[in-house]
Amino acid sequence: MKNRTMTPLMAALLLAFAQPPVLASDDHDHQAAEGQPHIELNLDDHDHGIAEEGHEHQAEARDHGHESDDNDHDHEEGEAHEEEGLLLSPAQSAIAGIEVATVLETSLDFQHPLPAQLLTNPNQTSALSLPVDARVIARHVAPGQEVKQGTELLTLASSAIADTQGRHLLALAEWRRVKSLGKQAVSASRYQQARIDLETSLQDLLALGMTQPQIDALDQQESRLGQFILLAPHDGTVQQDNSVMQQNQPALTTLMVLANEHTLWAKAQVTPSQSALVTLGKRVTLRVGDQLVQARVIGRDHQLDPTTRTESVRLVLANPDHRLHAGQFATAYLSQSQRRGIVLPDTALARSPDGDWMVYLYDGERYAATEVQVLSSQEGMNLISGITPGSQVAVQGAFFLASEQAKSGFEIHNH
Image 1: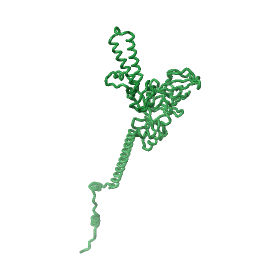
Image 2 (image 1 turned 90 degrees about the vertical axis):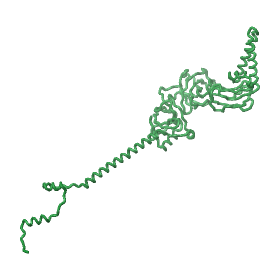
Image 3 (image 1 turned 180 degrees about the vertical axis):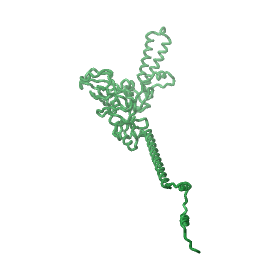
């Protein structure tokens, strides 16, 4: 084979076929064909960046969702606490020393203190006794029991009771006979005597404590003489029961004391210099222990006691919850302040975690902490605002309730 000299055209063609093939997209071919520069995009990095951004948005959404759920959970938990409060049974409240009272609007002013003592209201108090000898054959109530008018108290019996009842039946029969004959058939003296005997026997039975229906029933054949059931003459509390079963009690012995404590009296002692502040109908503040109540002046003696050189002033006060009792000592304050509000003792107040004052309202089942403002304090009593008159408030045991609240984590509500 002959050696041939490679021409320039042949060298160019050989170099072109020696280039490796390039695989490209149509766009790339189009760009290459038009002689435009080729731009490469790092799609992996771009996709990764988008994915990371998407993950971040999803994470933020999840975090936001968790936070919202937590807020909703806290809100629901707070509402649950709001509904629950501190739930204590009556036995637990008694063991903890918690006392609840209805609070009313009053004044806080401690000027001109006067010694006083609570008394039963004589208009609503009965010392039950008989004008004849008797014995108790049955007891139907116990000391301290609340009774209504007409409640059976004691069954009493004696020959003296039978004699009084018998004389009434004889007088009643004589009166019926005389009345049927008429004034023309009997003398005026006999007619009047029959009437007098009937009225006298009737009063004797009423003095025993018999009621008119009981007296009317004596005329019935099945009625048994010599005994009757003593009924409560009015509503009240059995304060004393001095009777002993089957023991003969002499006449005028107090068998039982029945007192209605819905209203009480108080007797305060004023000096001559203080008597000018006393006027009938004047309202004064009466402090009994840790309680403040409103009383009204209903009378005064206008005469000084020779020993104490003081004058007695009588007050009347409402006692709807029976928290006060006759015999308790008290202090009356004559001067009244124009600043009024709810007055509570120190034992009704506690500090909240943020340092505010709070009291505990009672709805019959639960104790709910409520923030209040203490406007004035004197001698262990506090004039407050933040609750409405008529609310049920724990006046004793606030410290215990605050401790239980701290353990339970209940929130404090400001109403």
